[in-house]
Image (cartoon, rainbow, N blue to C red; front, side, top):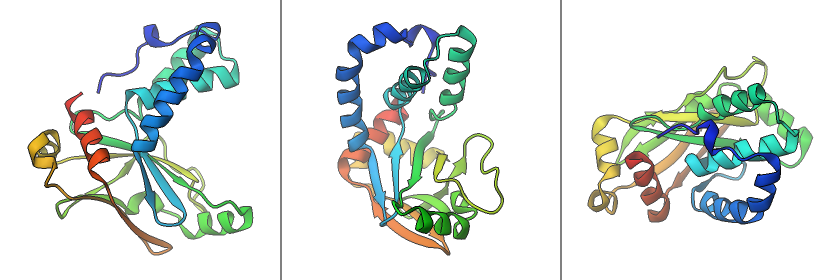
Length: 197
């Protein structure tokens, strides 16, 4: 997938002019790309629109205007875009109670090594993007993940006819959290589009 370029980034004032419309469109897109993985984890499969929104929102929130700082944000978020024959997702541990969340994060060390995309029975392990967890005693609440697809799986997901028959699940097999979610036709079609981009 083509990285986000500096020329695509709007200045703060220009972004404010289109922000509401852009956010509504991309949030609807994110909703179609969201997978609920058990009671405490959700994942969103990323594409150029979702990453562009994250960049623009970070610049807006942090009031970032210096060119070097903008370039740094673009570079950082571009790491989350899928490459050739890859899918990319952000997995979020969502436990409202802070004590329960902290207990879970300690119990789920190594969580990112236990997430799998399963396509017609073929298991593809996630790998973390970026430096990964910096605390060996607990896992982060947010994980940026990629799945490097074998060529046969990528070809199947690119093929409109084949994906109608393809079964895709997202799974975790960590001792502290085991869950499985079957992806619907709409999200599988979106992933096929990602692979063709």
